[in-house]
Image 1 (spheres, rainbow, N blue to C red):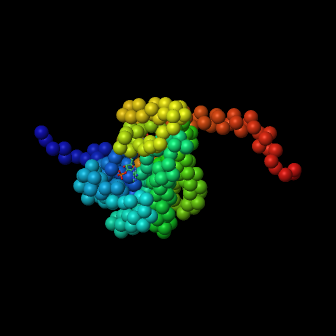
Image 2 (image 1 turned 45 degrees about the horizontal axis):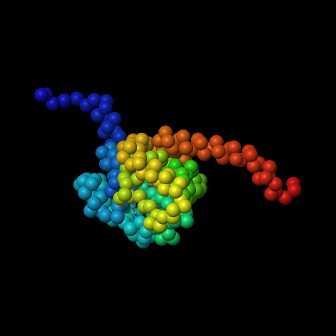
Image 3 (image 1 turned 45 degrees about the vertical axis):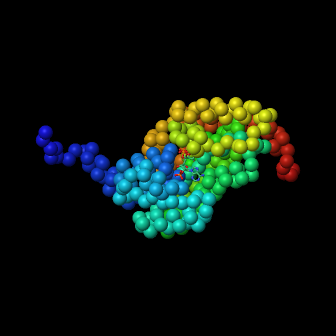
Length: 297
Ligand SMILES: NC(=O)c1ccc[n+]([C@@H]2O[C@H](COP(=O)([O-])OP(=O)(O)OC[C@H]3O[C@@H](n4cnc5c(N)ncnc54)[C@H](OP(=O)(O)O)[C@@H]3O)[C@@H](O)[C@H]2O)c1
């Protein structure tokens, strides 16, 4: 067959997008599986440069494969020094950090009374404090360059929580609150910030390898057991496609004016709407009591 000698418009678009992307460096946490891995693969395929973290750099390198634009970083996200080192390494290696995705995180199920102090604090360390630490370490670089995008992955549980997921919700509410204010604090420096609030996505999230359930179980919390069982049954059949989520994260970073909050998936959209209606109803129903606490005008 004859070789194609002319360049099509599509070829030009791909080359142009690769040239634009070539300057952008992404830093993604928790990338050896799930949403993080899908994102890293998509980014590399589109010509971006990527530094990504994992508890095991070898495992991360193995699943991503060798790539000249990829830097696998072994990071202990519970250790602020380890996070700092990884950010410095990524910046030194590529010369900039343009987009940060705080993706690492895991679900924790169980009633408030059942979960141990350690189970709760461990989860806050990864879902909340690692996110805050990463942000604190990348901001000096982003402020100096006068640009950057930060995408923090929370969850629909950070806006409309479900029975049995109270502590997970607490971590994700923290991420949402922190991110909403961060967006305002750094807007004038040219830094764009979004908190993504996904519904159920088909990753390892609900599998035994990722999900933590309270070791202590109290018989009285049957409703919590039922709710968790219902969610765990959805493992492998969740509606959300991680590859489409990756496309959305890239679109957010490329958008000059992205939303501060993005609910992802039809389930997240429906749950957010139901919660808004609930809040609106409660707000009106209890308005008189709310107003009763002011000093007289
Ligand atoms: N999938 C969903 O339905 C869903 C819905 C809402 C929000 N989310 C959020 O989306 C993010 C990604 O989750 P996923 O769905 O992709 O789940 P996943 O397939 O289980 O992947 C989770 C990633 O987070 C990292 N991680 C998990 N536990 C960790 C720990 N103890 N210490 C350090 N890193 C840890 C892992 O990194 P390494 O193994 O590479 O170290 C892993 O790559 C999480 O923040 C999750 O809360 C997911």
